[in-house]
Image 1 (tube, one colour):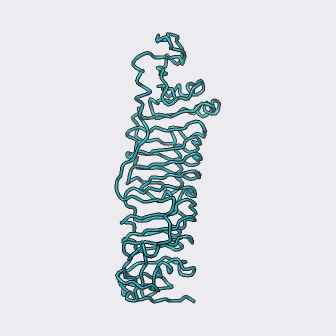
Image 2 (cartoon, rainbow, N blue to C red):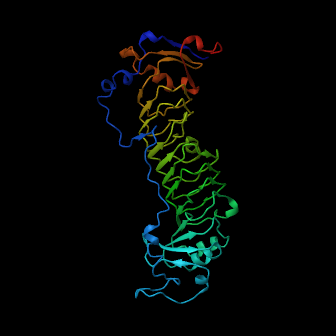
Image 3 (tube, one colour):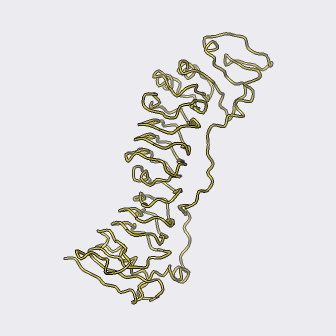
Length: 381
């Protein structure tokens, strides 16, 4: 049978941290890893597309046959690749030489490369034989540079969905808007990806099974994201910048250390099972914590905004022991309890009682809702 607990506001039910946090945490030490969700725009260092050091000699001496130009003379040896307008710069940048080529010759460039190579695409298209070439020449690393293409979408018909371990970076076109189904799935050599602000839509499994991926930045606050597995099978992500927490629920977030939510999401969640994040601050504007949303195994400290209206079942992990809030004034309820809270009153015996109700082994099996007064509580409760 369900039990009902009625706690009136004037009893002084209050979280210690809301009135004077320092009094209740004198023996508490700050966690090593701190994650703060930013509500401002901030500045992001966007990687990709800077070819100045790589292209500075393209107008000078050109080596069109990937051979020696130490005497400063142009190599006049001709080949089928030269006839197809391929150019190999004679000054490597970051140990990658640069090749400008047409789609028809990409497989040949990959197969014959002896150095780490940046391939500058002339169009958004990868020939199907490129997959075999990558596997045959797996000891050489490649950057796929699409910055000089004019397309606004990458779809399965462009054939970039190929399993490989030696493509280590993707540079997107400046006007890219859509990343379709499985765009760069199984790119197992990529460690970092920055999705530009121009991208409006990210499809299912776009980066699925990118097992080496560690850092992800998604810069468009209004991006539309597939509800299914954009980053599924990416267990090693440690840094994640995103406007959309939907993706957290689709991925393995166990090793996530730095979480930066840009913009103001109304719903937060996705940290169930996380083993790294010890502290988190939710910005004003967040209204709901999903079921298991803050159930991280290492999470000890949570700061809630005044805009919170719903706390999902099992929202807090067992290790959470310190809760701060801007304002939780009002009545909270579910089928098991009604609890009134007023931060202007302080009672030692009532300290953290509301928080304890949220975490109670029996009561947390249902979501808790906030209303401004007891009269708003549905009669069915």
